[in-house]
Amino acid sequence: MAGIVNYVKESFEELRTNVTWTPWAEAQRLTIVVAVFSIIFSLAIWGVDTFFAKILGYIYDLVLGNI
Image (spheres, rainbow, N blue to C red):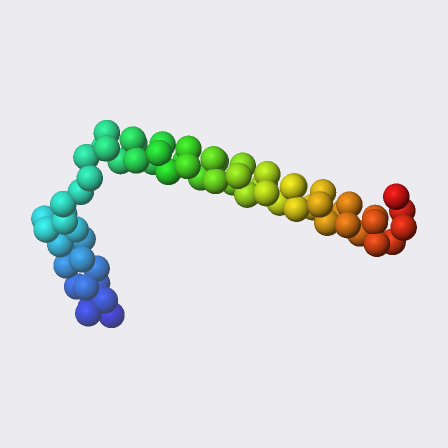
């Protein structure tokens, strides 16, 4: 158990002293960039999915004689 506690203490010490953290303003900016591109990408996927759903629906209706 003492080994685990020592490991956690050393890990926090290394995070505090040896890791270079991204400045807060840059982290916020990059988070916004990722969010915007995620929304754009999800809208693009939704559009392509809707397009193919309509095309396949038309083909199914044509094959089944519903048109």
